[in-house]
Amino acid sequence: MQAFPVPILPSHPRTRPRTALVASADRSFRQRLAHILSGLRWQVREAEGGAQAWAEAESAALDAVIVDAWLPDLELSEFVRDFRGNFPEVELVTAAGSNAAESPRGPHRQELLYALRQSQETDTAAWNAASELSPAHEPTVPPKKGPQSELCCPVPALPVRQEAPSLPGAEAAAAVRFAAGRLPGKTDSGVNERLPELVGDAACMLEVSRRVRLVAPRMTPVLIEGPTGSGKELVAEAVHRLSARSRRPLVTINCAAIPEALLEAELFGHTRGAFTGAVQGRTGRIEAADGGTLFLDEIGEMPLGLQSKLLRFVECGELQRVGDNETVKVDVRVIAATHRPLAQQAHDGAFRSDLYYRLAVFLIRTPSLIDHAEDLPLLVESILQKLGRDVPRKRIDQAAIEKLAAHNWPGNVRELEHVLERGMILAGESPVLTSREIDFGGIVN
Image (tube, rainbow, N blue to C red):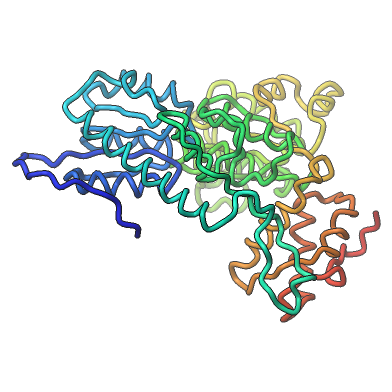
C-alpha cells in the first residue's frame, strides 16, 4: 500500500477513542482517508453508501462522518439534511467543496478537513504519476506483442486517462473523482451515472440507471417491462441493493414457473392440512420478504383469480395464509416484471386494471439488445470477464465481433451470454474466440 503523509500528534488521554465514519463507494478513497485518520489517532469505520452509513450511525457511537461528494444509493443533499436532523451531535463533512454548510463548526473540523485535503492531494499526485507513464492522447492500450497480436482486439478499448487539471477546491476534487472511473459529463448527484450491473453507455441504458437511482430509496412499487433476456431481474436487484432494505432479503418468485394450483400457497403460505399433501405449515414468499423486497417476475402470467388476493396485499400490506382465517401484517416493497404489454392486457381484461395501476406506479423499461447495439463490445467484455472466473479467460478477435454485430439478437443479452459460453467451449484450449466458434444455435436472422 502506498505510504501517505501522516502527521504525528501527541497523545491525549480519552475515556473513549474518537470514531469517524468514511462513506464512499470508492474503496481507494475510503482507504486513503482511513490511513490518514488512523495516524491522527481516530478509529475508522467504512460505509459503501448512504444507507449503510445511516445504519452505522445508529449502531455505533460516532464523533464524525466524512461523506464523498457522490453516494451510489442516496442523493447527497437529502442525506446531509436528514443526517444532521437525526444525528446533530455527529460532525459531518463532505468532499463536495462546501464543507461549512454540513454541520456547525465542531472541535474536530480542521483535523477532518486536513485529512480530506491530504487524501485528495495524494490521489491527484498518484494520478499525475500515472499520466506521465501513459500518454494523455493515446487512443487505446496497445496489445501485447505476439504471433496473434493482429488477430486479437481488446474489447472494449480502455478509457483514456486525461491529464489532471490543476484546479483549486471543488473543481480539482471533481477531476479526481472522474479519474477514479466516473462517467464524464455527469453531475455530482450521480443520478445519471451507469450502475455497475447494468452494462451499457447508450442513452436508453443510462435512462434505466437514472430511473433506478431515483426510485430505489422510496417505497414506491416498481413495474419493469422489457423483452425476455433484457435484464429485468438485474434491474430489480439494483433497486433493492440501492434501497434502505438492502440488508433484508430480496425474495424472487417466477409466476410463470409454478403451477396455478400451487402458486397461491407459494406466495401466501399455508397451514397444516390446508390441502392434500400439506403435512405441515409453510411460510409463503411474501412473508419471507418481510422488511425487504418481493420481486414478482412474469407477473403477466398470474391467474386472474389470484390477482384479486394479491391486490389486497398490495393495498393494505396484509395477507392470509391458505387454510387460515387470520391475517398477517407484513412490510414488503413490491417490484414486478413482465415481457408482456401489461397496460394493453389490463385494457383488454386479461389482467386486472386495478392491480396494474397499483403495480405500475413507477415504470422502468429495459431495452432490447438491438436498441443499444453500440454497447455490444462492452457487453462482450463484461460477459467474457464473468465467464473467465472459473476457467482461463479468453479474448475475441475482430471477425468474431463483426459476426456478433450482424446478428439481430432475438434473445437479447441472455442469448449473447449463451453464445459466448458456447464459443468458449468450442474454442477448447485456444485463448482466442474466432468467428468459427460463434454459433447461434440454429437461430436464423
